[in-house]
Length: 186
Image (cartoon, rainbow, N blue to C red; front, side, top):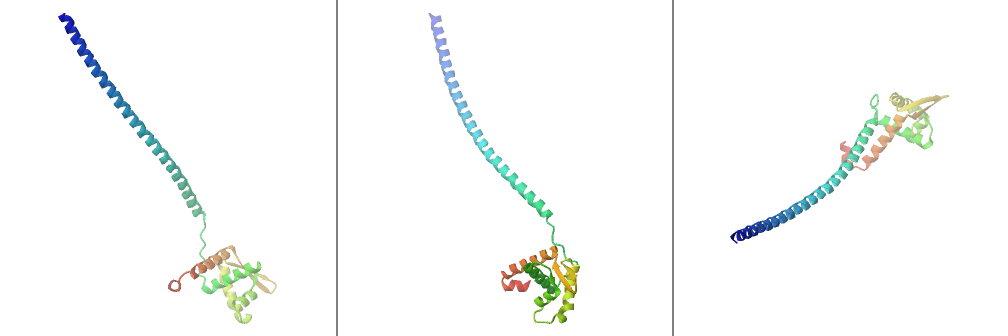
């Protein structure tokens, strides 16, 4: 009987420990489940963040490509060549006058016509040599080309001359937008 009693006591104690162990294991597994769930949520957040980062990286790559193409195209643009010698303001205005007349009638302009336009009210014989000197300076700088047709001399702007004239005209338009104080101080 005592044996039975001891045996029952041991069995009860073992059962009690097994129940406690079982409860502890259940709690531990529940805690592991919670930890796994929170880890899964963190991983999902990181994956969402990584997809956002991936999108930013793609956009950044596109921007870098565009910047690179702009840099390449900027290097391919040829700057306007500096004239071989300084162009005076009078020569610039004659170049502009020639350019504008040429645009208007779409052909080369005779020196006589240019003189009548540029030196209005003065006799051609009085300004011919001065105008010829100015035109020669423009020709030396590859801004115009002069041709003779019979007794008459004709001039027309080269591509370089057209670029310079349109550049000067564009610059003058932007200067007109500036206050007078700024223009006078330049």
